[in-house]
Image 1 (tube, one colour):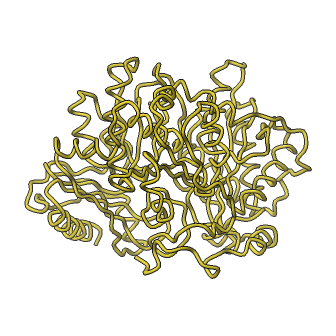
Image 2: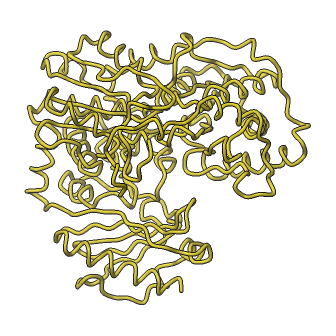
Image 3: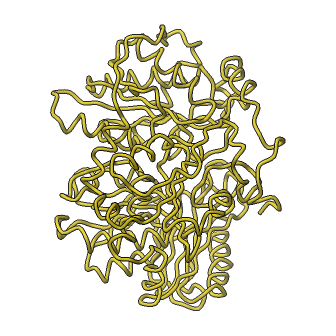
Length: 538
């Protein structure tokens, strides 16, 4: 934790936007260097132009690879494209258009030249494909999500509307790196003309009444504060207020590629993470000015919920409350619709699911795993501990297959409007009923070889039979929901669990842990978890 965490950014913390954009065009990657290759993580290719990790050749080659991928898959419909407010998003967006147009792809861009949140793009893809045009649409979101201002990001969403799966991203990344290695000679580029307009904002905002009880929020008159944190939702919150006549204030409508108005995150960096108390410190200053106060990250796929009585809610706590409320207040949802959670999300969700008599669908880390269930309605809610979630409409049909931070922020307002209780007050009731778990994530040092070993572990590699004084009842290397590999390990007891996963960017592995027996027991779980993992990967 940096000693400056939660304090206002200073001039020395700010990026040089001119230098950042200049480097985007000037620096050319060498794909023989791993750090300069196109590499898709859980949400696209990310990096900084200053490190030659996100540059014009990367984006041109990746877009060309997407063109070839969609042709191979028989995707002949339009491609929706949008971008967030990061400094590198605008040049990357232009590069992508130059390639798409040169390849004769039908491209739909925002009608008002506005920023496009990730959920609005997912919504657009699904709306087009649901209408039955005889072809299928897909999309590109230019965003590194909540990453610091120096980063850029580029994500492909196929016709299912959600994040591309590993097969697709591996193919696209490999082809992009091949194109770069061959001197970009097979990449087509031209002036970005001949694009079509689409009203992302209007289509999304007008449809909200089919998934959120906007009339209840309006009738309640509750005071809502929405802070876009300088991100792509900045134009959406005002439109939502006006369309549904809500008592809503856009707390900070500023957009600045340096994010000079932010407070520093836990490590002293500017990061637009609405689930971080440090990053949200300036928002929390308004905690008592509103009945519900919310924040979104740069592409609005994450949410932060602030209440007058408790401040910023832990994301796990809000997920539990959201699930409890939705499955009790959505009468048209299928009786067998499952509750989706990632395996590092709180076991409070398991206990809420059991009380609701609803099946739980536990999957590995990454929102992409929820896509099939949300698409066919077999999973009515999918959420992950990093403050990302989406759910289905009142009638049980798909809304988005990507995370929707705007939607979850509005749900917090609906919960208060309908129940008269803030989400944090409702969580206190759940904790009284089921117990109050202590949850934390810590990092442990690991060599590349040890990280590789961790990613390949199976439950049988764990010799331990006890964890922090309790019998181990499960040792998981594959998720119970869909059988997919965890890429690590999860160990479970009656009242506690831990999961260990290798970091994709640092020489550490992450230990997620939770205990329903208090903070001291959690610390014991963490200590023993490290010993168990270290022994298994030695």
